Image (tube, rainbow, N blue to C red; front, side, top):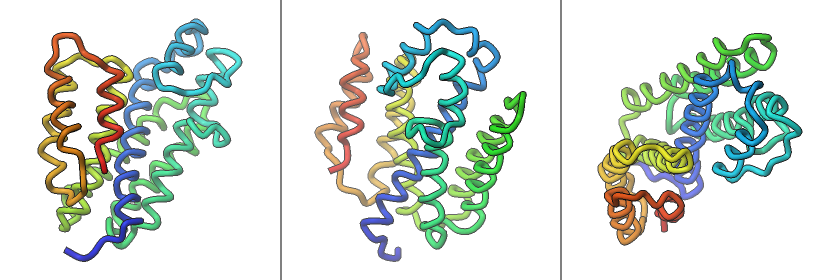
Length: 221
């Protein structure tokens, strides 16, 4: 394995997190986009609370538009996709040009969706390109540490988001099992105490989502 700088290790981790953040939040919008404009303000406000997003929006319709496409909103999907791309650009040598190209294609698809009067298809293209990026990571990156750091970031983000959405216990247990398998392969320093506590939390009959989020966010040392 070549030596990975501390800065690039951090970028690999956040590339995994940001790409997953875009993928999962788009999953929510793809499932509910047609009805989002008709949502009550209380429903989108509850979403903001769960995601710890400042409610800077004037209505459910304003939220639907800006949360997807407003580049000046640091919490928007487009902003998170831009962060994924910025990390991928710097990591070209580590991840390869093919992996980078799929993040670039996702950026292009986001631009198409922003200009479309019916953006669902382009939003799906973003998810497809991110899924293809993950496939290339699995298939083309020979360095296990590089591959595992990206996938570890992806898994941390998924557990965080699924907890915020109050996903069912079995789905969270599945994600934590994958986290357990992945983290030893990263070469990263992490808290074994917190990992053990995460495993304990997902086995509880009543899920403590807030504690799970706190522990997974603090897992790296």
